[in-house]
Length: 118
Ligand SMILES: [Zn+2]
Image 1 (cartoon, rainbow, N blue to C red):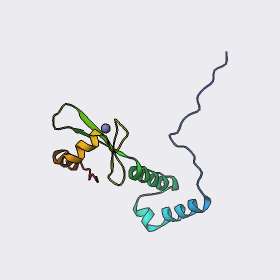
Image 2: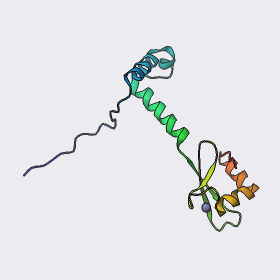
Image 3: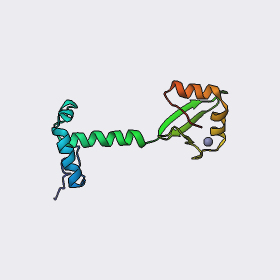
Image 4: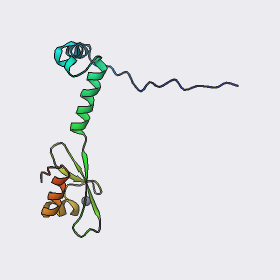
């Protein structure tokens, strides 16, 4: 009987980046600022930069209960604070119109840390 084992997964994956960029990251990691930030390896600095990139560019989800409290409104908020309805995939549906018209919803969004730009 032949058994095939899964290779051990370390939790890290190799991704190629331009050599020049890798050298710049190495220089940063070895700089006083890099040491101050606690980096000992290039991969740590790259992972931090990637995490910040995703944080900045991934839409954030905002869930609000409408004033009649009969349903939740779910919005994806892009990095510019512009909402898009998660249900209709639209920026001009009834949910967006309700958000635009409601001070209560806008205040609720702000309370949840969202600055809505509409
Ligand atoms: Zn909608």
